[in-house]
Length: 289
Image (tube, rainbow, N blue to C red; front, side, top):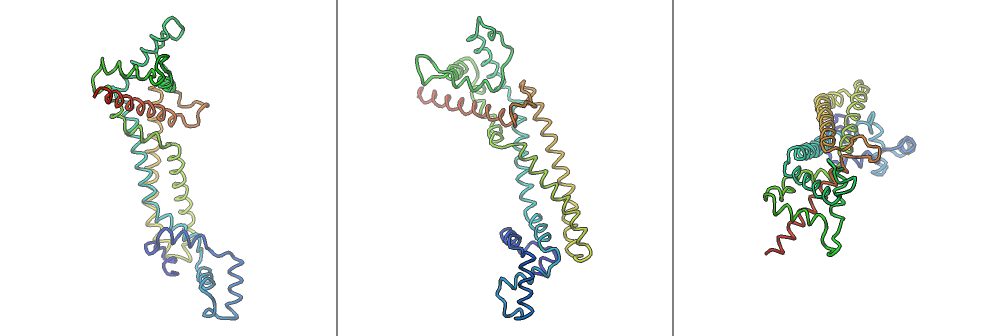
């Protein structure tokens, strides 16, 4: 074990192994106590736990090295997860920009709203907040509690528009996936990775004198990693700017103080509409069979 940690070779260890070794890193008081027994009894008379304390205490920067090895062990999977989620957001924003069927449906909902509000100040609206889409599913018929305004809209669209428009939710599957995620959380996670890389770059400089092999192995790992994380930060920043563009395209305020995560609320509302819309289409289809 000692040679593996000293050289920084994480391969023989599993993630659970490394986490356990870090968790049970001996405290200075434990080390002093075991060393006092060792000087009297000898190592062969110590239990395995005490022998572990002695071995660990003999490795310079024991805990720091293990934490660096754990980071290296988990780096690829962490970044793969981040890339996967960024990709979902990129595709979701592209769908929102280019899905003309959805744009057509929104225009139709606006027309219906203006008809219903005819004669009032709201009857000549040029647009509406995406959050208002929730009301389309909440407003119910006075004659049938199971029928909502959205049922009326879907029925009307089925009669006057193409099947492609009616099935617009099928063109917005990534929006649904993105609605369950948070771009802010990804940014925070990536910031943490970048910060860890920067800290490790500093820490391994301190290990250069007493742990040359560990330093060399970690330096080979960290140099390309620094380039990769910088590129990931740039990709994340570009995506955040694109999110602002899409929110503004739909007339939403990306900097509203009323919502801690306006993008997530925006996506969730649209995904909710897609779910209700698709459900009503299936419901109508069953009644017509």
